Each structure stands twice: as structure tokens, then as C-alpha cells.
Image (cartoon, rainbow, N blue to C red; front, side, top):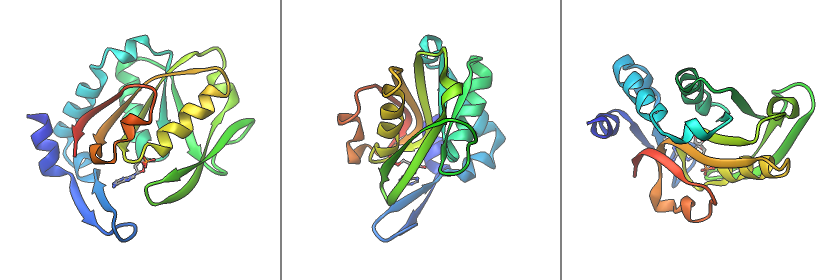
Length: 172
Ligand code: AMP
């Protein structure tokens, strides 16, 4: 089973990047092309992508999965990037992370003419990142219709705070 193979491959790093956080390292998945492929096929199989005008990939690990999915579902990919990475006119917002604060921005021109978005990231923890993207898009009268992630840390109950569906392949 895909979920079992992922569970056996994703590695836990306790107290990284700070004490009390158990970091789920997904990079070993990328070392196994067959597993990586099966994961992308599974994520792309979600009918939510048919309804979407575009995907929003989150800096940086979200780019790995969103770019692969965008190729399969044949939808445009928008990059939500950390500070000072994107040129041009941006919409930007600060957000709280499981282990700190950061800010994300999207190029204003990249979402012009698009209405419905699916967020793609490697992992959902507190949901602060996802909420930040929701707020950014909402400020421009755009809709988030769902979020696709490899892993949901369900004990953090982020889904209770988000007003769109989250589709994880694996929950812890
Ligand atoms: P959050 O905003 O709390 O949902 O955090 C989600 C983002 O932070 C994702 O982009 C993850 O890459 C990263 N992240 C947060 N917590 C962890 C964790 N325990 N293990 C791995 N990545 C994490």
C-alpha cells in the first residue's frame, strides 16, 4: 500500500528545527523514483484539480509536488514564495509557522483571470501557511477550493480552522 510505503520511508527528526518539533523528512521519498511517481499519480487523481483554474505551490518543498502534479493535471502553477524572491507587483502576507514566523507573496499578474485555486504543499501542520495563502487570495476575491498535501499532522487539528477541504495522502 502507498500509505505504508510512505510511512516506512518518511523519516522523523525529533527536536528539529527546534525543541519539541518532530520534523517529518520527506526527502527519502524523492530518492525512490517509483514511490515518488506513485505518490504524484495518487495526488493528481483527486477530482478537485478538474474544478481548479490553477495550483498554488508553496515555497519550497511544496514546489516539488505541485510542479509534478501541474504537469499531469495540466493546470497552471502559481508560486507562493518567501520574502525577496519574486519580482514585480506582489500581494504579500506574514504568517505563523509551527516553528516561527515567515511571509509569503504571490505575483499579482500570475493570478489575473483565474478564480479557483488548489493549494499544494508537502505537509499540513498548524495550517498557518495554508491560511496565509487563503487570506492572500481572498483579499483579491479569489477562491481556495481545496488543499492537497502528502502529510497531515492531524493531531494539530488544522482542518478545524480552515474553510476548505484538505486532501492528505497520509495522516499522523
Ligand atoms: P503550518 O503552517 O504549521 O501548517 O506548517 C506547514 C509548513 O511548514 C509546510 O510547508 C511544511 O513544510 C513545514 N512544516 C511544519 N511542521 C513540520 C514538521 N513537523 N515536519 C516537516 N515540515 C513541517
